[in-house]
Image (cartoon, rainbow, N blue to C red; front, top):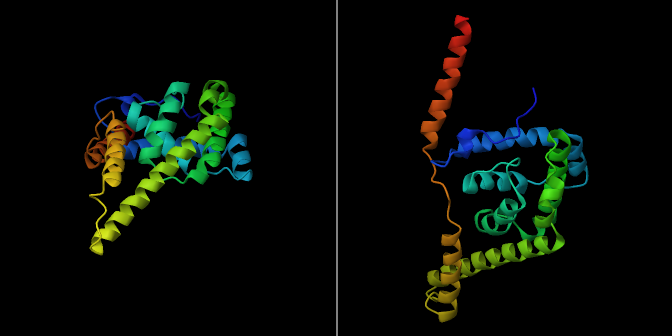
Length: 209
């Protein structure tokens, strides 16, 4: 059965985020990609990258778009604004992420006729990759500074009142606030129970026929 690359309406809806359902859909999507010639070639080239799943999940969570609906502006926003602040990623992983995105786009082109290689190209340039590396490095620096501050407090040497640290922390907090979720989460347990109930109902209906 051919996979429908268009994001289901239940995941794109604005009233809430079902994290479990999003992860399931992305996993099924990437399973098909990894089994494709483009996916196998990317793995052989050393481009197997867990960040790809994270990026696709963030795109659905934050702006409600899947790969088919994602334009160059959407990809650039998620890649440069959302991903650096919400993903635990190393700057050195950027070439792998960009390479896997190009392979993924080539699969979308061939399998679904979406022309994503051309459409996403402006967001996947060397310059864009360099900018993403810088942003991930900044986040790493902030994490280190926060750890140093915590260790200092534990030793009785606080740096949190230093003007440079206050300015740095305030700027980072402003960035995080600006990158807040567009959509609220829904109760994951409630949604999971609803999915189970629907599956049970479908099985029951099949038995009656």
